[in-house]
Image 1 (cartoon, rainbow, N blue to C red):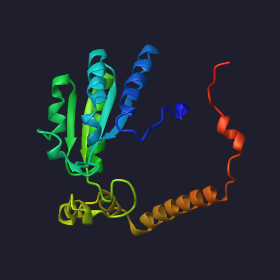
Image 2: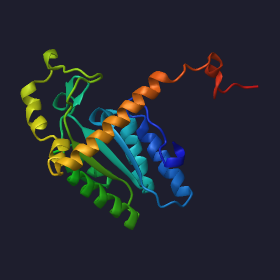
Image 3: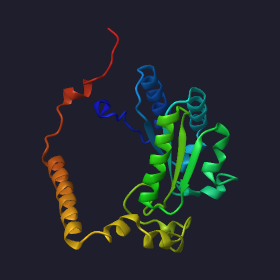
Image 4: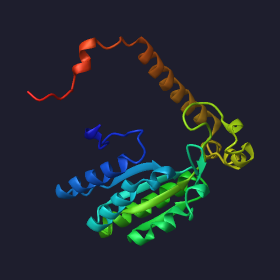
Length: 216
């Protein structure tokens, strides 16, 4: 919602990146001190609009934090078959922006690096920054199932990431009672969302024309 500072999202690869830069430029014109963060996968960095957006943001010194969730695969193609140099954060330094990379999926490190980059942007007006967060895809590209049988990756490759699961690591630091309370609250929220969706009436046919623009 725009009221909450969220400009929307899209499943089309890379499209949110120029939106974020445009939003940041609009905030600049409004003399706002807000920082814009945009999230995308490693496949999106191969889109032309990604580099165009970084170049524009760097030229205008816009406070945009580009956050790449690098899971090493674009659908079924591994990073080393798509790019000669796989170190994304190093490749972007010619744009003159600060970069950082968190390699082990540690959420506290991600927070610390993001805070450092945001503070630098807000304090110096030096322009955008890039944060690469290396993770790993647990399931298939789209859907809830495993896809190791397809052959493009192996369960052995996945195993170290499973064993270092960030959620499990954080949960292990909580008292059992506190952890159980959080889990009950989350499960109840998910169940309520399912109930609301299943019990809600279907939209009326005339709603097909809601918010559709037509020249008079």
